[in-house]
Every structure is written in structure tokens, then in C-alpha cells.
Image 1 (cartoon, rainbow, N blue to C red):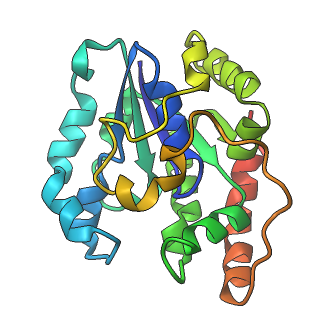
Image 2 (cartoon, helix red, strand yellow; image 1 turned 45 degrees about the vertical axis):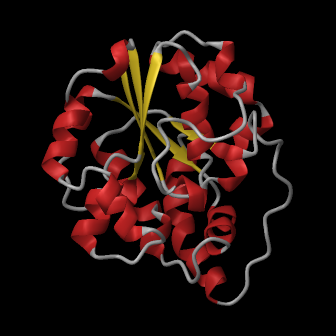
Image 3 (cartoon, rainbow, N blue to C red; image 1 turned 180 degrees about the vertical axis):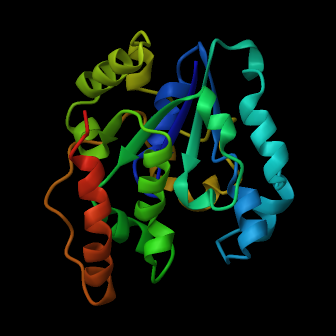
Length: 231
């Protein structure tokens, strides 16, 4: 089985990759199209030049690898994808995947993203792109808040939905980086590298100010569209 897990940034996506990657039957791939996206778009992200130099930045080549054999002699493959990376990228390979859509409330995404990169835009946080991906490749929708509230129950439900046996190894992992982390992990993955399991349930929504309030309002219709069909 090949899983394409679609999300925007700051969506619990790395912890989910660690959960699946901790299974002995899974290979994992961290944001395959990130380098190609940065090279094509010219966007100024942290570590931009290092990312492009360290990862495959040819979209056609990345797409061929996504469509190719599962690596490392594993039975299954978990690919962590960002909808924001896919404008103009090949997508036919996703027809052969189980497509899953991971969402998080926009207020939490914006607060988390802004702590790492100032003044995010609607494009940066990925909600509109995720709906476009969902419309082309529908599949189960799962909310990060539900996972943090009940990791075992939600992962069991997700595995059942896609016809995959649940493995308790998904519920915890050793702290620290993973061999399949992208080189950007040093900038973005500090919290998850300190973790050994999913964080506890989140509290009240964060308070937003100024342009962040408007950005949240722009993102909410996209979030609500997917939230309406979540597991």
C-alpha cells in the first residue's frame, strides 16, 4: 500500500509520519516535492538553497519515484505531501495511492506557522490547495485535534477505513530525528524531535491579532469543507 498523506504545514503531519514510519512494514518519505517547489516557485523559505541542493528538485523525477517501487523492501510506503508544493507538479502518480487528508483548525496553524516564519499568507498555510487536492483525490479526512485527543482510537479508525491493520508501534517512537527527515527538519521539527508520542489534547484556540484574524477568516471555509466529512 502507498499512502499519500496530504496536509498543510503545522498540521501534526510530522508526528503522523513518525507514527507510520515507526512500523516495521513501512517506508516513509518526507515532502518529496519540497525542493522542486522551491526551485520552481522561487519562494524564499528557510534553508531554501540547502533544500534544493540536498533533495531531488526535478518534478518529473520525483513523480516517477512516487509511482515506482516501494523502497527498502517494505510492504507499505507513507509519503508526507504538502498541497502547497503541488502547483504545476505531476500528480498522476497519486492515482495509485490511498489518499488521506489531514486537517487542523486555521487558528492553530496560523499561530504555529507564524512562530517559525513571519506574516504567512493563505497560500503559505495551504487550505485552498488542500481542497483542490481533495476534489481530485478524495479520501478519508482526519483532524489533528481528534488524533491528539484519542491517538489510539483515531489511528485504529483510520487504519480500518483504509484496510490496513493497526500496529501499536504507531503510538510511540524514540525522541530525536529520523533517517527519513528532510534537511529542513533542523528548522521546523524541534518540537517533534523532543517528543516520543503524540502531544496531549489541545486547549482553547489561540488568540490572533491583526492580519492573522483576516487570514483565519479566509481559511475557515476551506477547513469547514473538509471538516464536514472527517472521520
